Length: 208
Image 1 (spheres, helix red, strand yellow):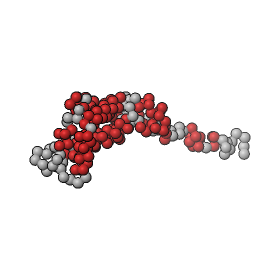
Image 2 (cartoon, rainbow, N blue to C red):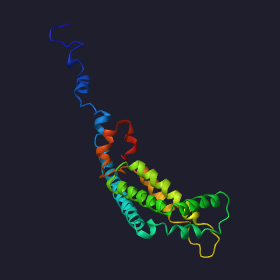
Image 3 (cartoon, helix red, strand yellow):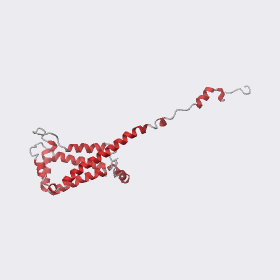
Image 4 (cartoon, helix red, strand yellow):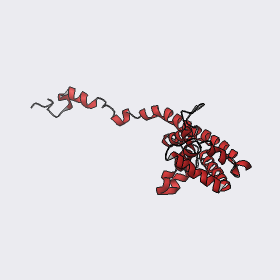
């Protein structure tokens, strides 16, 4: 090999290879997708805010309900006789016995049932408005609303009765509570944001 003649290891011997080495390598996939999460940040944040607003509005509805339960006539249990009495025509097995059970409890301790009802609805309203133990409140309010729907409203039965227009308003409360339970950001603007890290393994009781 003559002096000055390029050998196989020299860059000059392979200009194409040199160009390949100096060409800018494509950015890793992670860098290419760097901006993708930000594209969905706005809608996700918007859904979380919406869930927070709906939770608070639901709490306002419960607060109004609770305020009506603190009236003296309700606390004395005067409304129960009418609420359960209008379902005397229902003869469906199990449902009839279920209504009779609560009618018996209301007749046995009308004041106790009136006060307990007012307290439960107040706690639900406070939990929703402040966002405290949201998941417990959502499930609890759904169960409580089912109790009202099945006993005090008797599922809106009999549906074939003249003038029947719906199956009872409490079904709407059940659906709203379960929808908020499943919604992302159901603890937006809430006490749960501070409470959840402190509860450790019991953090599931708080919303996200």
